[in-house]
Length: 280
Image (cartoon, rainbow, N blue to C red; front, side, top):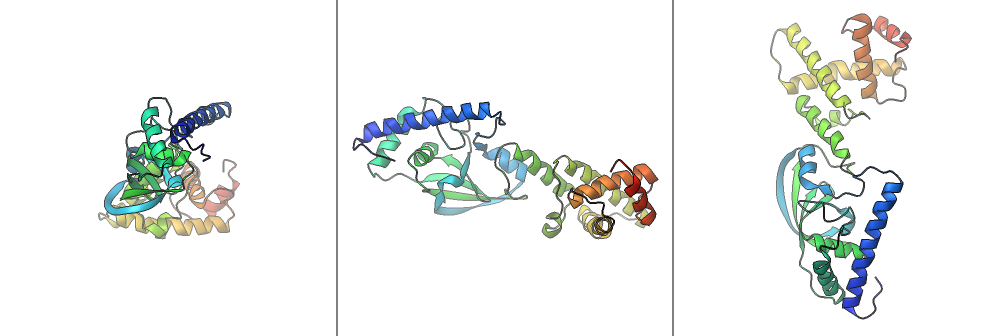
């Protein structure tokens, strides 16, 4: 950022500038009627809970892109998504760090958690805020990587955690291998719960038919190979997928199949009746 040659005055201007931008950003979001969570810092605990924590490992000192730092462990109310201060309360500490940065003094690394490609600050929120304000592209950080059941791809705001959480619960109930899971996609996150019940019901009928207990992994694997893939191929051939995902088409028509025919079988007669049903 432009400098006057007086670090104290520059630091004061830096803080006033980012506070003004934070207020204007909040006002613009209100005028556009955007969701309240668009400009919120992502809460680390909620993100990890939605994705399903499986472990962690220390990566040591690394250079972290400032734009990849999107969340916080415990300071979600003090800063917005771009780590701009939400009040005057942090001004003194903020300006002290800004003066040191402008003078070229050594700034200690922050401490952060890494989840996928997202970073969450554990210690060093003001340093990240100053880095944003001064246009820095990277910052030194001691990083601990957290591994999860579901990947963090697609998380941009707090509302996205609902979809991730329901997908994780689906995987707990229907533990498909990675390649198969990648093909299970729905646009309405609540469909994962309905699909879970559909798979479990199919597994119960399978166990009755074979008169033996099957664990969840076996049921999931056999459902995918013996029910889901053959049915999806049949629906594609019958042009019954439409503009939905194949999973949505399967789920909708599986429910329609029982409503119309009171059967769990798939054959040409069932497909013809489903095609003729106006409810599809």
